[in-house]
Image (tube, rainbow, N blue to C red; front, side, top):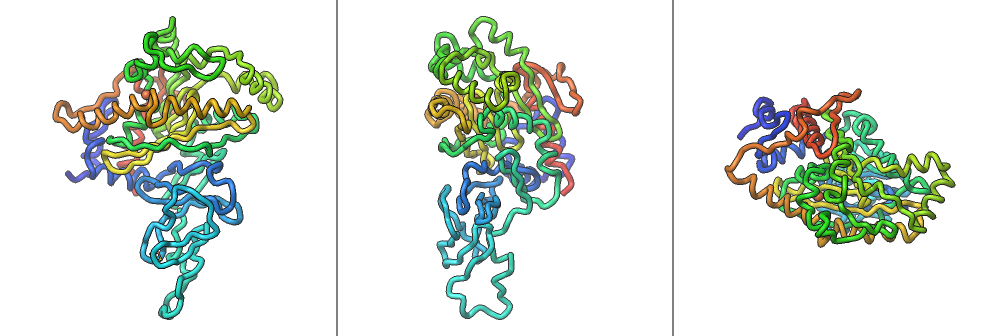
Length: 432
Ligand code: FES
Ligand SMILES: [Fe+2]
């Protein structure tokens, strides 16, 4: 199948998409070039590389890269590939280095990617110039940070990060403002796992509130309540089955941007419960010292449950974490889940965030395993000839446009997924 603009456009309709967008390796290759290869992609957080020489290895789409902090304190994103014969240079997940040394012939590179030295430098021809940037680990043309979140682009031109984030930026603000010191820390560790499914399944799911009472029934129904939240919130996580929770849920806002693909789901009713625990009270006092009572009340007002930053990052406010989606192939995806600690908050509170995320989003957790199993089943079922179409029709008649031209709706609709695919087709059919 050759994909020209016409065939691509036939794949995506307002409320349904063709199953091949999850299955066809050719479309995956196009996505890597046109979505991950052109736009802004989340790379990491500056708290993961706090000191000069700190580095972290990751991927932008399928491109291996290193996020590193250079000796001058500046953050760089460089290709993890040796300027000599292309070997992966940094093999570790993270670390601290004065120089990066390639395992193959010993060339060394500075932490900004520049070639430092060629091993056994005699015998090179006169045309060989070790100052030639092509011999270094190539630097990505665009790297920008928003409140600690580092994004990079493989392309030198395109909209600014500010334009790309747009209104979704306010979800980062809401999260970071909750830290008494005004910064968050992602260095507590990471839950990493792979699933047998397409990367978009995880992106869609992160802002899908429709699935919660069903996929997670064993955790959220009255009979199957499996875990308690933090101290002072012992009522558990009843989402679908406590009093008017389900009706309240229907009133929550849902937002999706057709131009960027970002979207969010309003907060869960459980987030509204009053917390009288002394540790929580101590935290509120710390916030009030910084912001005053009124602003603190505003900051702590639950607003959003999950925000998806197209194409590869999500923020969850309740079981607090940053999730990074790394596409491996059309039917294989890596997920990295970083617990968020709020700088300046009581240590015990931050410990609880980390512990609680072990329960909800680790590889053997009560929540995320349900989702991963659904992704696997989707990938397997979509490969059948049962039906060619995947539906995102819930709420389509009641989508409204906001002043930005984005979609807004309420509750458990599929407005965010409609927005994701509107952005997907826009990017997949855009001129280079
Ligand atoms: S491939 Fe890296 S030094 Fe030869
Ligand atoms: Fe889920």
